[in-house]
Amino acid sequence: MTEKPSILIVGAGAIGSFYGAILKKAGCPVDTVLRSEYEVVREKGIRITSPLGDLSFRPDHVYRDGGTPEVWPDYLILCVKVLPGVNRAELVKPWMGPNTRLVLIENGLGIEQELAEAFPENPIISCLAFIAASRTEPGVVEHKAYGKLVMGTYPRGIDEHCRTLSELFIEGGIKVDVTEAVVGERWRKCLWNTPFNPLSVIANGADTKTILDTDGGEALIRAMIGEVMAVAAAEGYPMDESLIDQNIDGTRKMPPYKNSMALDYLNDRPIERDAVLGNVVAIAERQGIAVPHLNTVLVTLKMRAALEGRA
Amino acid sequence: MTEKPSILIVGAGAIGSFYGAILKKAGCPVDTVLRSEYEVVREKGIRITSPLGDLSFRPDHVYRDGGTPEVWPDYLILCVKVLPGVNRAELVKPWMGPNTRLVLIENGLGIEQELAEAFPENPIISCLAFIAASRTEPGVVEHKAYGKLVMGTYPRGIDEHCRTLSELFIEGGIKVDVTEAVVGERWRKCLWNTPFNPLSVIANGADTKTILDTDGGEALIRAMIGEVMAVAAAEGYPMDESLIDQNIDGTRKMPPYKNSMALDYLNDRPIERDAVLGNVVAIAERQGIAVPHLNTVLVTLKMRAALEGRA
Image 1 (cartoon, rainbow over the protein chains, first blue to last red):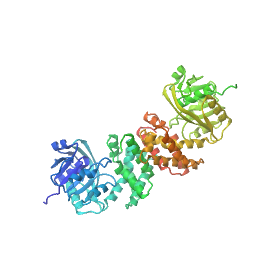
Image 2 (cartoon, each protein chain N blue to C red):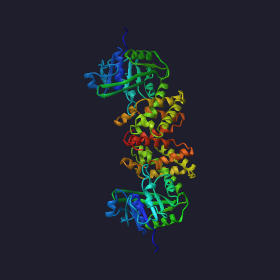
Image 3 (cartoon, each protein chain N blue to C red):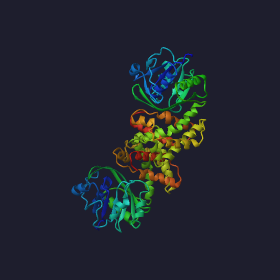
Image 4 (cartoon, helix red, strand yellow):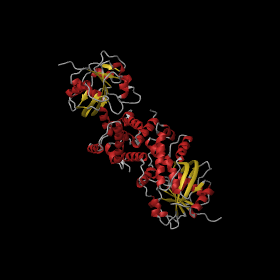
């Protein structure tokens, strides 16, 4: 058995903890960089309940945010929220060695570019997580369902680093789709997230059923999905119109569902407004595409933030 | 001095109380129909502080909602909010004699038609109030500023009843503009109300300054005003594009202002969503005019209402 590549997880919330555990199961050395949960994880490790079994593990090293690494990791996996006040390039900089591959397991669109500019020599692997998991208390994560990753090399293709990592995740027990066009996959995921997440926030936490069953609600969602699609097409990722029906029908088949952005909002946590919506509207503007529905929701969220004294 | 026409005010909140007081000052017999404030007004009358002086008065008769009139009034002045659950035709029906003129001092668009259909033989006078006044406790009203009425016969023209009433209001001490096209004046007022009021609600009570200063806020308001204007034009009320600038500039000159719909929302009172916004979107649909910004706001408000278990 050859030596497994070393992993460093930056941002060990629900997502980072879960995928760290999977790679630990695959036999990799897994370290974490933590801020507020440093003490508890150092003492007790990370506890994870999951339909896959008990995924609890002790990281090989637990670093404090702002600390210094003993060695550069082979893969640095970044799992923090994409928020206006968080400079992700600065956050990972101390841990990025010359051969470190940077792996993003994060939501949204247009989130890779600033990291690609900050680390032009390091390969970047961009991932989308399809998972239901939540951090229930410090150092404790509940994995409820799913877990699949869609991943590819940024900005496109599938290089050896991506291939190797995907095999480790599969070895650890989850499904992985590798894709030649990961940015296109981001657009595809945003067909759902970009309309439903922010709309749910401005509707004060409405779930999927409330959103779709409200008079005019489904039509509004359809119009918003259409706008995302038009921007994606202009960016070189045309999609089939039938995806609108698929997104609606698929959502109607799920139990009524309050998405994570709505939950963040209702719990006074910051929301990934720009990663999920603002960047789409900015790209639309650059491409000269009208997105009046998306823009109305975006500006409303900005007004609320201004009212609450946030950016 | 000839005998003055008799007045019955239905809905003696801030607006009804104020304009009732003005007509009392003009020498008219003024009665009121009240629901929750029946006892206190019967006992103490209506107290009104105003820059115009003390406008407090005792109605000649105080009727209880559901009671029976002793005589039909010459003018029935309706000042209730226009809300989905309130059947205004039913509300005024017991008090409408064969010669009673029905006067509406209410906000919004498309609010006359159901009354015109219910009382096809009675003249209808439609009024817009430009006033800052609020009911501070049962039977007590604070008139802060303004007070002008814009009025005309519905659906258009200025008949003798309208003329007579306007002269009484002027005699009582306020400014009145009579207009041949009162529905056009409603559209003109809605250039402001239809964008600002509902937007302020979905932005959780943002004031005018917050709305306009937010990144993208002024552009959104301009787009919404443009949509209202397009619908008004299709309805036969074309307006000059310069009114967009005028509305923005005028608003910027005022002190930051939280509009009455925002205050209603923040105080858990029902909002006149359909009178101010829903009817505009419905008319747009009938006319085949796209109003994506207005529609996004409307549907969001409906989602919130659904979430709160309201219609």
